[in-house]
Length: 333
Image (cartoon, rainbow, N blue to C red; front, side, top):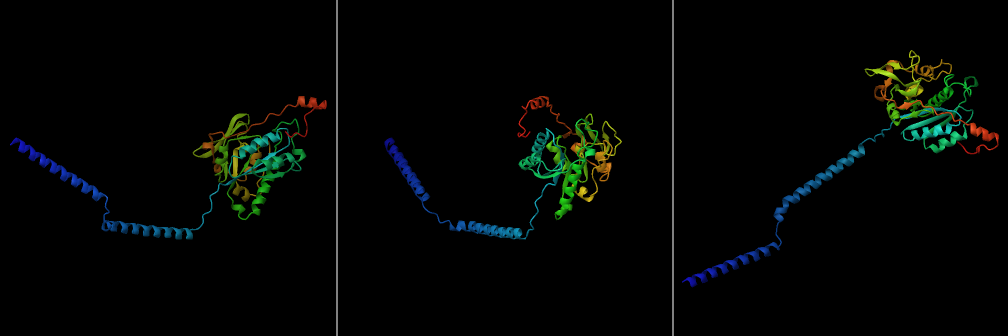
């Protein structure tokens, strides 16, 4: 009885195993066969077709829009016209080299270099050609009675008057010769060749509407001179000498809108102005104190310095020259 029971269980187990195995084989065979899913793919195909049609329609709309759109003029920064008077001396090339390499970092800058000379000199001409800058080279000699002599103090007579005025004359004539030149956006700045300039000062002045102002360091026997600003307006000047002057500031401390310069063709520097009044002689006919535009964080930052290169001492050179052993004059310094 027990033996017969064991045989039945064994038979049931074998049959169950065979049926399971056959089921597994059948399932594996079905996985390898193609399925007719066309009726499932129809909605998907319709969606793809609709999206492609929408894409083509949008592309056509974009092409039509581009064809009818007016071309936009490129946005450019106002040009900064820098007028620099210069005169022949031992440090002239060094000063102009330093200054030109500062200007190379300033976009949209036009350098107007005016020599105190009856003619253009090869030294300045060659330097400008090699500078990589947009430039204009002019010359205008200072009248003999206004020229500083060798041992005169620098404050005795104003220097660079004729040269700055010549730069203004050229600028006005050149703009009139160009169509729309009177309406050109630009800024005029007077940069002496011995000063030191932060690149930031040029970006500060670029937005000048009439006359913009800022501090100047190491000037007038002080650490700095500056306009004093209250409520966004210039109310007075921090200066150690004659603060009652109309505009008691240094030449490096202001810039003027090109439009304002062109609209006032008679405005220039007065070579007969009393000592310290040269800047005022130019600005008085252009702007009032209330209209001044303070820059450099409300005139709280010094971004330009009235530096001066020390005059080289040539005693040994002169002694060697007396012996016929001086430096080769063909070597340009």
